[in-house]
Amino acid sequence: MRGYPKSNYLAFFSGGVHGDLHRIDNLGIGRERRSAFGLNWGARFRDIQDGTSNTMLMSEYLTGVQSPPDLRGYFFTTQAGGSMLFTKYTPNSSAPDVLVGWDIYWCGPGLNQPELNLPCERGRNPPATNTAAARSRHPGGVHVLLADGSARFVGDSVEILVWQAMASIQGSEVYELP
Image 1 (tube, rainbow, N blue to C red):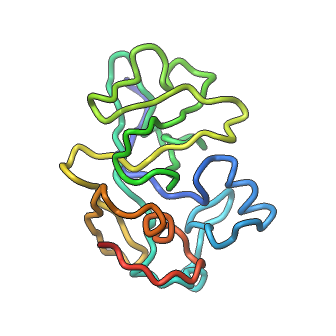
Image 2: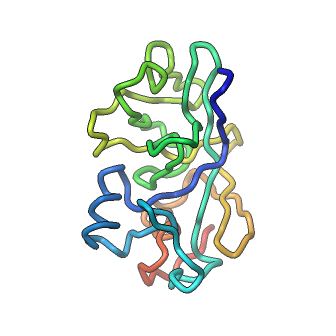
């Protein structure tokens, strides 16, 4: 799909679904799940109270196929699977990404491809329940970028609470990635 810049690396945003962004960033509800990236907000090093070596910033994500055109990984948008990843599911989950429902290029006909680790279903508008999980073609996990600048491989079997804690910046969790 020419003219649509895409990336295989997307940032973790606050919460588990798109609707959490508004609750966490604007209303302050669930601040313990705030990630380094949010709506019109980005963390400074001093904001990362859980420690930079304990906080995930970005992860791999699969961009989808070219024909039919698939906008997953199109980072010039504020949509799950575009510029945003969430931690509702662990890496490479078989649960489908729930992607914006108003465009045929976001999980339109022929784009739900679980056999390629690209499971998806059409979401709703507004996109409150839309979500996208970290995904890769690596056997057993995904690479993540930590706030200290290091990269780690995280297995698909990581416990969901550890995965979610590692994407938060101020939850006071003491977890290490396996």
